Image (cartoon, rainbow, N blue to C red):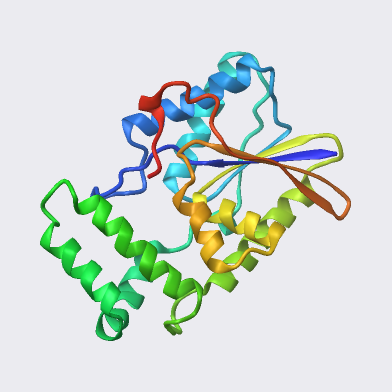
Length: 239
């Protein structure tokens, strides 16, 4: 049996001008993950990451902790297919036609716009994004220039297969990625419909990890959205 560990990046800079960088909390979460691996004697023979800066930073921080403790930490390989779904593009291209034809999304958009300068803005934007994403994933809004959920899932499946081929028997690989690719992996494994798959994204903890065991054609879930290293409530975040 070989082990594949998928790590969601630490908390990024939600609602900031540059989302794609870790917040101070995200940096601490990544450090806690590395310390947990050191305490439990875990090592990885292959390390990979997606192309985003938040993937890179989470990988670097956890790796620095591992190397400082004398643990093996190979130079990470970059796999572009482990990038997150393009949330900005989903909103930019899908929101206008949905506002025109969908009363619920029109109301959610109005509520967000009215509260943009308040502390409630983040929560209202998330509610709007979840509703728009569901219409996109279920192909209830057609936008030719946009990667579909099915295409996204197929992209992630191909990335997982790439790592499986690169992972020798009885060894361990770790991939630093985002909530979407981890949910897509679960979706492929259990043949989940879009809504159930998206639900996994919204409940994913920052710097959590999910583990999969595999050999030959067999690919099984060992753990999902685990965060024992985040041993204080103040360390928990979703985005």
